[in-house]
Amino acid sequence: MEETVSWGFLLLAVLLAASYRLTIISSVLSQARTAPPLPVRPHARGPVVSVLVPARNEAHQIAECLHSLVAQTYDPFEIVVIDDGSEDETAKVVERIAETDSRVKRLHVDGPPPGWSGKCHALAVGAEAAKGEWLLFTDADTQHAPETLATVIDYASARGIGLLSLTGEQKAIGLWERIVQPVVFELLDQWYPLAEVNDPRSPLAAANGIFLLVRRDAYEAVGGHRRVAGEILEDVALARAVKAQGFPIWFAPGQGLVAARMYRNFSEIRLGWTKNLYLLLDGKMSRVMIRASQLFLTGLAPLLFLTAMGIMALNGAGIPSLGIIALATAWAVALVAEALYRSRRGDDPIMAWSHPVAAACVLYFLLESTVRHRFGMGITWKGRTYR
Image (cartoon, rainbow, N blue to C red; front, side):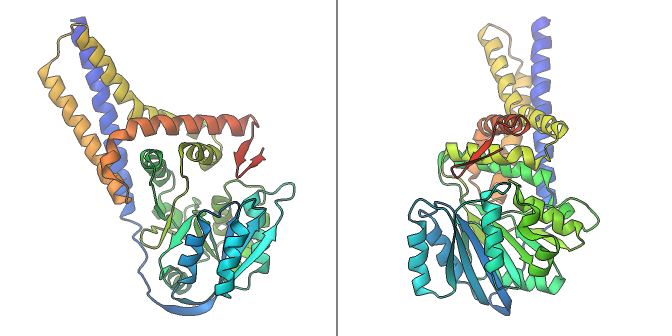
């Protein structure tokens, strides 16, 4: 009787966890339909756009970014690369491209003054030197489709949008990228539903720093990057300021328009998300605990329960056939849902099996992020430590 109760409890726990996971994925996929991609505009002319690219030790990837930007079908625009104290060949790479295209310019800054993050300072300097009526802040690890500028400027101008951001396609090449990144972005889809971000009646605001387009009057009205000078999560902070000022903002899927490879190995993944996850939850412990519990229940708990059931079976406990069928069905449904979600985002659906591993990693990153931020232990990024 005791063995039956134990089996029943574990089976119920696995079924509930798998059902909860399925509910979450269904909700995310349903929300995605409320924010369709932007209609692509192949060519366009309009006001001057200044594309601002902060770069610190980006020699290994900035050429690909700049080549995609100079190929834009929009006109006119300029590209301002702010070299933030790079110690590699970044300056040489940018200068070589600037020699072949007069629209590319390089600015040099020697690092942030006290109270500033490196990225905010670089972008503030770049914005002061920029000539455009629109400012596009984008990262050195991005690649842009030729029609991207034409599409976003046409869309934002026609609708009076003050700030427009794209989620972007995440290029996951290495094993750890393919395991971890889809799970993190699934969480972000839950935390920042695009329909709610785009609703002027909702206070929720968000943006993605890999692609953040802002009209200059809106940017200056809120104080630009000086307003968010010390923020690590400057993209979300700037979007909040713009929306609070009354300017419409729009957050849209960017697949097919912009792609980025944010991190290249496990160390970069850990540092990057440790820097951001606690802040993405507004630094609220209640939200941290809820999300940590969710990661445990939907990612780790089923695996732990399955392991416990396996140990019980090895110790001679009877295996109810109906329970095995129900368990296998629930787990298969959860894996299929995970595969569908990854496929929708352009990730490898075959990696759905790795969700428990990813959940464990992200849970660790979230807890480390919380400890580091709350106890002033410092966040290290690009060779600089912020407290």
